[in-house]
Image (tube, rainbow, N blue to C red; front, top):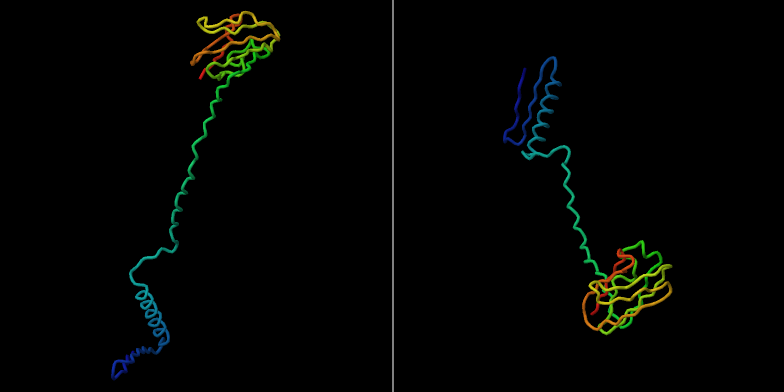
Length: 166
């Protein structure tokens, strides 16, 4: 085996290994080792995974939800028509329409019996009493003070309503 180094100034360095049976094989091994060493030095010591880990997507910012618009309270009126609806004796809070009724102080509510049987409009505590209102007939009452007044039918006590006077 023979080893030669030729460089007077150190600029050229050649290594030749010769072997009677495998000189080319030794040169190939040294070339591969040199290439691997150069690659590992070129990469440095930083680690880079072969498959990049996914970056989590930022959570979406929810759109602001507008505040719900409240249903407007009906403005009180001076004269209000109310109905005793068909089939009212079998109903409760829907026997009178509208329910509740909004009326201004000094306003008048007129109930019309649109049912096939007699009913009443009677204020709870006896504030007012329509007496019997026959089918197709009406009863009116003027409200002179503000407040909330509950009423019912004396013949069918499940029928209830409210008059709000403002």
